[in-house]
Image 1 (cartoon, one colour):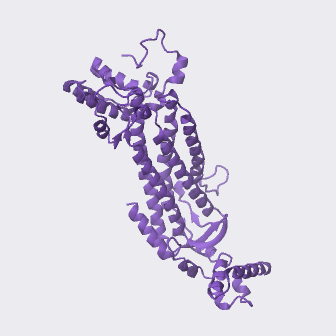
Image 2 (image 1 turned 90 degrees about the horizontal axis):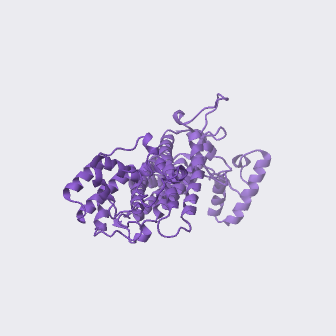
Image 3 (image 1 turned 30 degrees about the vertical axis):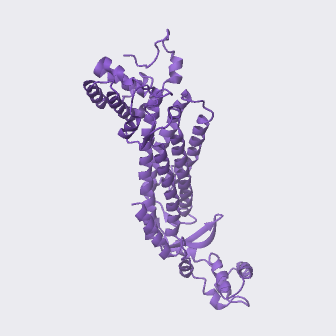
Length: 448
């Protein structure tokens, strides 16, 4: 049996130049298991449509289930994963293998394979993402009362707790998970039976076929079904946004672990050293998260550019949709477990974090709020405290050391207490330890 699924009208064999550009088996072999799964379902659908006898169906499905993934040497011998499966099937059952492609095209075949692959990739990502979110939520619960500086514009702003910081990223990851599951639900439909573009001529029950492969439904349009790659684009976008969130987390933790901040210590097993400087402990995992986040934006952009302007129905351009997907899945599979382990293994310098969060400057808003609570208009209180800070900085003292003034009472200065400041932030979503504990427990219950 030829290793190609076409060529009858051609007098010349494919040029090696064509093969170098056209063949995709070097990467689409990753779809092997899904191609076998889809082919077995199609064989059963052919039997239900009266094309295959029970004996032929049994022989074909048994042979398909016995196939093994290609070896490295075989990657150069076939055009794509579909021709490989059919060729290997022919070696086992002879001419009967030729009946498998009855009423089917490589167009609906690859679209189905890819949807099966994407569904598995989405499930894998969802599982790994949930593990990271649970780790952060548990850390949020454990550190609900650990004060640390909160930042805006990369400057210390107001005190928060480390648990509150953790839950900010849990909220992002929960949105990422929701987007991923939405994309999975939207994309969980089966193109098989669309054939080349106009639909199979056989009386195939496409709804039953879809259900046999675990899809929620069959695609509504054969013309759209073979060329639709929305699920692929949504997967790449969702992962890219996830990595953008993780890049922000990575940037925060890089700073927290810096020699200047020293709020946290990275676990030794997830940091690297320097070939030149023996004292170095580098956050390479976190830096690679940042780097992959940038590259993932390119993967999404490339996919959208690939899809833009393609005429209906199938075009060879769509062969190029797979490599960015395969790369992205490998990155996610390596990155999320590493980041989960890193966060679980962080050593917190709670004393230093609390000390930084207790700075008078960080608590200046508390002083203005205390004045506002006794009737001073907040804008006026803001101006008074701002001027007082300027005076304290010029003298090289703290607000407490500067003491009361004509406008600021000793009772007002008692507001310069980090624990009191945190406990006041008890509105929904706030950083009070009680609220953070409640939010962490809710997140853990949802992520169960």
